[in-house]
Image 1: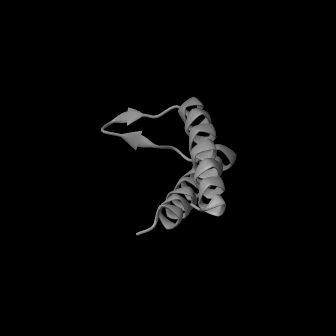
Image 2: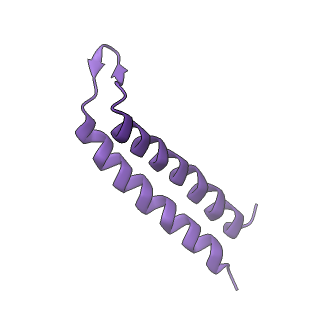
Length: 66
C-alpha cells in the first residue's frame, strides 16, 4: 500500500468519525460506556481532533510522494 493511499484512507476514516461526533452534538444523542454517561463536551474535543486528523490525512494524500 502506498503512502498516498494510506493517508487518504486514514483521512476518510477520521472525517467520518468527525461527522459522527457532529451528529451526536446536533442531535443530542446519549452515549454510555461501561455505565458512564459520556458528556457532550468530550464530543466537541473529539470532533475537532478527528476533523484535524481527517483534514491532515486528506491533504497529505492529495500531495502524493514524488
